[in-house]
Amino acid sequence: MKQSICLMSLLLLCGCTFIPNYQRPQMDVPGEWNNQAIKNSYDIARDWWMSFDSAELNQLMNEALSHNHDVLAGIQRVKQARANLKIARADLFPNIDASADASRVHSHPAKASAMDSTNLQAGLSIAYELDLFGANRSNVAAVRSSLHASQYDEDALALVVMSDVAQSYFLLLNLQERLAIANINLNNAKEVLRIISARVREGSESELELAQQSVLVANNEAARALLIEQLQNSQNALAVLLGKTPQALNIKEYSLATLAVPIICPRQPSELLERRPDIKAAEASLVAANANIGVARAAFFPSISLGLANNISAAGFHEPVTKTLSLTSSLAMPLFQGGRIKGGVELATARQRELIEIYRKTVLTAFQEVEDALVAVKIAQDRENILEVAVQQARKAYQLSKRKYDLGAINFQTLLDTQNAQLSAEDSFTQAKLSRLTSAVTLFKALGGGW
Image (cartoon, rainbow, N blue to C red; front, side, top):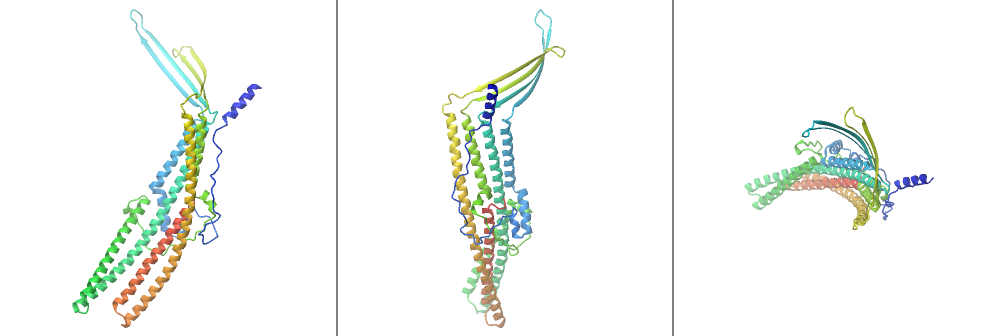
């Protein structure tokens, strides 16, 4: 009876750890978003970028997921974390080793006949550390949570890369549109310069008008050169995101006009705690730190190891075999460590408390990013609507000016002024379209994408 009680007590001890009970840090979570224009909500699709209705963007996203070097490096970090978990789990099982040895000695002492001796040995040994106080199991729990954190970090990294690809693609299309507008502006300015030059030669215009128009042409050329530089830089940046050289990049689309602008209706703020991979990564790191406290506390208690060895030996292949079986046990109890173990517990506890604050900051930052993105989406939509009206009026003004010019009611300069005003309005409008698209991407990212 006593032996049974002792055995049951030992089994109960083997199941205990000193990991503190984990509770998610308490935070004030708002019931709704301040700047959500549409109160309806729905889940975000994992492939959220498809809501922009761009086949080319979908292809770029697939390329980035397969070839982006940051994403690929993140996958390897997850594999490292998974391998660390395998290593940690190995401490929960016995170590079994086999050995074999053979030797033959030939000796020829002085004034004696030569002697030969053979020695053959083989053995099997088992070593096992009883995890009575949960040090190894606590370590496994910590490493497992670190693996989860690595997986969430990889998801967060992929979300950032996908967002960067979408925004870089939109910027590239916007710059192509703006460059086309700048080319028209420059050609118009050169045409006016040609007309003024002819009039100066005729004596109907002064050198002042010629100089002023020359400055305008130079400014337009400088603006066009800047757009070309920005366009090439955006192409280079997009190529890197796709894991290829700029020479291998081939963008077929040339305008933002064909893209759809999705309507995004986020769910309640409390769901963000489960949707954002960076929040989940911060919490997984906190859980790992919590488990490490159990590892540090277990160091106060003794460690017990058991060993079993079975060896056979013989003086030759045809000699009698000697068998030996040995069972060993050892106990190591820390008596005086100069404060090392206590310091380890304090270190683990302080690390856990640090990660609590990091988690809270991560959550608050996530709330801020969503609110900022909601504001940006609303302002971008309002601005696009206003500038769309401005473009319509500018086009109307140009058509009226063209009719008057055809009738001889206005001069060519006035016609070009109204056309330049139209082009300027269209340039502002395409930038507003870009802002609306990029703000939608930012909101998708702030909400955790489709993770």
